[in-house]
Image 1 (cartoon, rainbow, N blue to C red):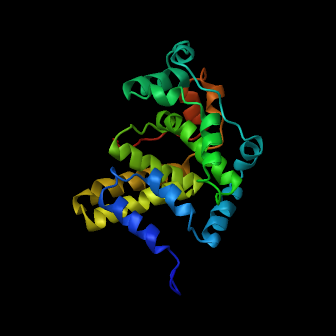
Image 2 (cartoon, one colour):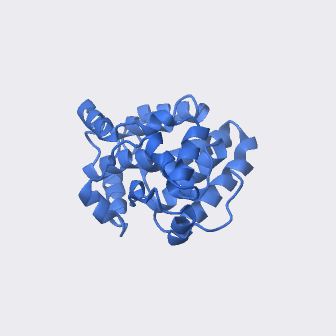
Length: 234
């Protein structure tokens, strides 16, 4: 890179591709592209952010990744429980493939691919665990699997986890609405503000073993995690 440049210009070109059409060049792809040339200072800063979250230490130490769940297991959960609501969310959104995904294998494959070579171990683990609990967070927060629900949840994540993936989601979306589709500004910013404020006021959801709470009433969990509030229509 030229003197004074911090953001790699080849990566910046890929960022602009994502900003042109966020649904065609997803943040998941952009996230992996960034690590190859990410400034060491930024990587270290994200590592410090993660380590500074009080609730993070036990999960980071255990490296817990749950075994795949099944619809049969979820069907045994009583109405009103987390498991019952989770099963409904999975079926309604056609996410059965996500439910049966082996995240231990996924983590091993990503590590072997070399794509995570510069990613510190704690961040690498939280990326995989984050994918595993993503749909649980939809259920717990009440944000639907819609465009606005996903944006609100991204801001919720960023408020609680301060992870590069979610920061990139916000950056790509704001770039798209600023330079391509200004008509999105009101709805997108409403989603971001709602998710950010909700995430700041709630207990941290990212370091819980939600798979152990399938039979717990959903409203009990929401009360425990300070999630009982009026949410935007997402």
